[in-house]
Image (cartoon, rainbow, N blue to C red; front, side, top):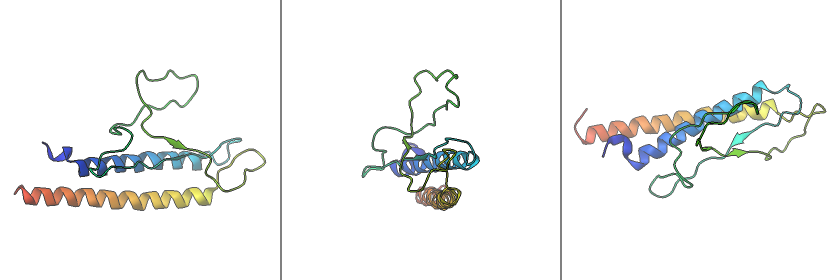
Length: 136
């Protein structure tokens, strides 16, 4: 078994990928803050079982994204992250835009701190494993 195949490291990698994808979604929300009828999106956080495996299937790769309805969908590419819509508690502006910049920036900041924590855990875990097997 390779070091990268350990369940805890796999779970940490999945969490890092989720944070990267969430940062992209939050940045998209901010960039569309003046777009009429735009509704902000967020991602549902992945859950893990006791062994560190993602509940609900593997989340190892990120899917290709369709940015327009006219684009052809990738064949056989599953949606790896569920979008969380409709949990906003703020008002929609007259133009139909529901992006609250303050809320999006708070989410982005929290996401960045969580990503830093996960990457620190990942690198320290690798360091401990390498020390244990004498590769350091």
